[in-house]
Amino acid sequence: QVQLVESGGGLVQPGGSLRLSCAASGRIFSINAMGWYREAPGKERELVADITSGGNTRYADSVKGRFTISRDNANNTMYLQMNNLKPEDMAVYYCKAQIRHDARPYTFQYWGQGTQVTVSS
Image 1 (cartoon, one colour):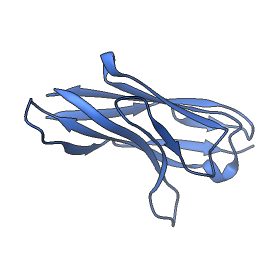
Image 2 (cartoon, rainbow, N blue to C red):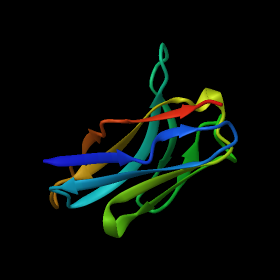
Image 3 (cartoon, helix red, strand yellow):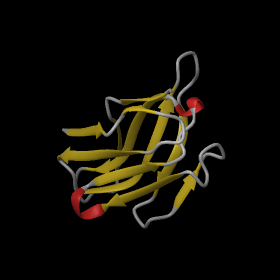
Image 4 (tube, rainbow, N blue to C red):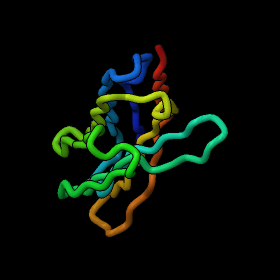
């Protein structure tokens, strides 16, 4: 019913930047909160940043001041601008969205397939 497609991952040197995108499509009435998570080898998936439909944001302490989350509600798209990347940021990044399919007050959680971010010299 809904697809979340991430893009923008890749290989970058320490100190470099990447911009991730997450585009939602399908049966969408509205999107509530959206978020970016990451999962490094041998570690649990963790919240990187999330954003409400009204634009309120929160960040993991490890990325504050370096990453910026934003969204384009008109196009059902979310972004993550990542600056000053560090080796410890290397992970698969996933987007998540809470989506309403119609006017009823029920939301459903969807995940994207993930995009790899590699930080290495």
